[in-house]
Amino acid sequence: MITTPPLSSVFETHLPLPGRRQGKVRDVYELPGAEARLLIVATDRISAFDVVMPTPVTGKGRLLTEMATLWFAFVEQRGLAKTHLLSTRVADLPASAGLTPQDRAMLDGRIMIARRCKVVPIECVARGYLDGSGWGEYQSTQSVCGVKLPSGLRRGDRLPEPIFTPATKEEMGKHDENISFERAAQLAGADVMTRLRAMTLAIYAAAHAYALERGVILADTKFEFGYDEAGELRLVDEVLTPDSSRYWPLDTWKPGGEQLSYDKQYLREYLNGLVAKGLWNKQSPGPELPGDVVEGTLRRYREARERLFPESPLR
Image (cartoon, rainbow, N blue to C red; front, side):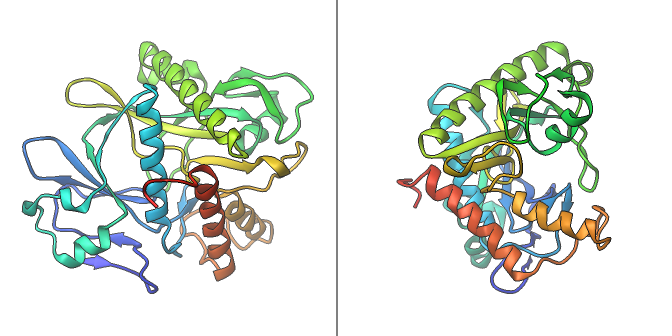
């Protein structure tokens, strides 16, 4: 059974597969077979402030899958990390999965077949610029997640060097919490977090340089990592999409205030306006989104895709 809102959006899926889990954006299933594999479906859901909005952004799931696939290849080709990704082809789903032709048509372009990994329960965040929750924390403490920063920085300033600012990985409906490296080490182990910090910053540095050459600033991003059945550490979930990253056009970047963006900041600003008017409290359920906000969000995601991968073989 497939649950789809109007206009061919995929808001959630109910496939005849075991182990269904629903995240903020993705539905995850276990695939049959000897190898431990997962089917990860990118829906058209969108979240902000850790709350899933009730309005789908039609086509977002396919766009995110394409971008994540391209970035996973970027990471692996440069030897920055191994990843969980095995395939994005619907044809590679086994016949024993019991999917109908309608299921397969719906899944086309929005799936990852991935190795099953035990996820490290820490969001690994790299920041090269000061914005978002980091900006709010800096205004109070002149530090972000325990990392002391120079005084006098403005919103949108580039940091002297990128910093690693971990966060707890909470269940859907709960807010992730910025924590210090020391606290992350207590939760996941000092050796693990030392390694993840190095991998996170290396991936960020390479992706930032790549984006900058194409006129885009990767201000910050978050990664997730997990251990496969052989105990190998892999980059999992998704990577460097506008859902998990803050992208700004280089030609309009001007520190000292809010930046134009190719990410969810447009949606966040709309929602902050509702909060300021007392129309929402940043708790579930989220408000229905008007058409212009949905289209404006998708337009920014598409712009990021076009600028970063203008000659993609997946196009």
